Image 1: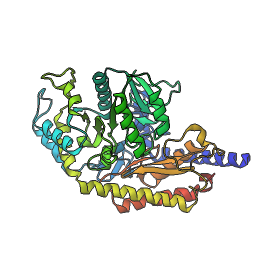
Image 2: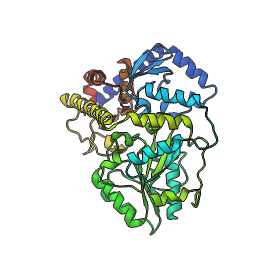
Image 3: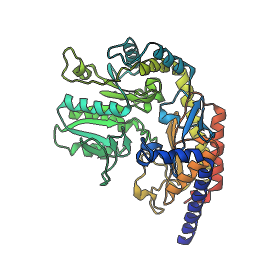
Image 4: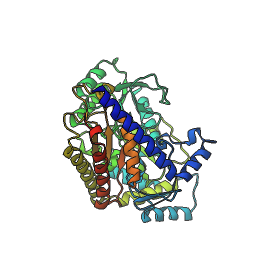
Amino acid sequence: MGSVSETVSTALSAALEQAHARYTNSHPQSLKIHDQACNYLPGGNTRTVLHTTPFPLTISSGQDTHLTTVDEQTYTDFLGEYTAAIYGHNHSAIKSALESAIRNGWNYGGHNELEPQLAEIVCERFPSIDLVRFVNSGTEANMVALATALAFTGRKKVLVFNKGYHGSTISGRAPSGKPSINLPHDFVVGTYNDVAGTEALVQSLPKDSLAAILVEPMLGSGGCYRGSAEFLGTLRRLASEHGALLIFDEVMTSRLHYNGLGSQTGVTPDLTTLGKWVGGGMSFGAFGGRRDIMALYDPRNGKLEHPGTFNNNVFTMKAGIAGCGLLTTEKLDALNGLGEKLTSQVVDVLSNRDILRDATVPAAPVADEMHAAQHPQRPPKMFVKGVGSLMAVHFAGPDREVLGGLFYHHMLEQGIYMAQRGFVALNIMLTDEHVALFVNAVEAFVQKWEQALKW
């Protein structure tokens, strides 16, 4: 048995080396630019998530559903700028809004008429937000939301969840000794969708110490695991009982329903954070919620200050107004329906080849020990999770990293651009034909590596 496993692993590793060689030969200009970038940027990179092995593609342009590289290779975009490019590329309405902003100048150093318009749109669209403030990214939105909770409650502890991601400075990784750039808050890390464990964890904390519970209604970067109604309802109850604020991070999930995914949970948070698409694909973030909490920032009589040179920049304000106008209830329902179709058809591919057999598709991120063949709750070696227009392809088992690398390069060779980690975010320009292209590519991969994908 061991020798068979070693043979499979050796074959997978050899195949990945060959894929890397083909990739390198096909993208000489991207490699050249990457090498040049390494002279001035650490590893040629200023945004960690964009690094891929053996080196990243360099994009030269985007139009509608496609991206083109400096090597003149064109791909159908299934990444959607990690949810921000929900409009596709170079959408005429967004382009027109930006051109209009340029005509009137920028960097005013004063208020503009656009900011109350976008604020009204946000408050009317997301029922948990009475008042809102703008920032420049989802990371910043979550940072300031946490700072707000600490100031409002006068407490220090913050409950986050393993694999939760709230920006580069608030990552809910379990303690591992690995260096990070997490903020020096007094974080407590729970297990996502673990109702009993979370209850016990909160009850174990010193009295009146918990300031906030920060959670995504669906783990975004953590793998598209949806929070159960029981889990999110428990968080609401625990926050209320302990005098803490419940914060929904909807930077990614706000696109999964016209009113945000949080509105469909039966739970009302005290604060909500937004980002990405709400600013029309420009640099954007926002946090808002209960009127009494947000009143802390009223400069007429509030206690907190929150400056920010670009909080109300005209490019984001103009693009945000245009973008939110594009994403009607009907448009979002259609997009999320297309995503459900994609996820369902990929599940069918895996089921039809028995990849999901004799394994348990998990409801939360897979713990390290679950990758062993003998684990009673071992996940399938390949499975998908998702809600609406967001999906993640997962690999498990001892060869999971090699399989993930092979899948990424296989999809590129089929003309599909997605995250190396398996993340997919659809945009409104994609159609049933594009979904068929993706599903057929998955089918070809599973057919080729069927035996390696089974326990």
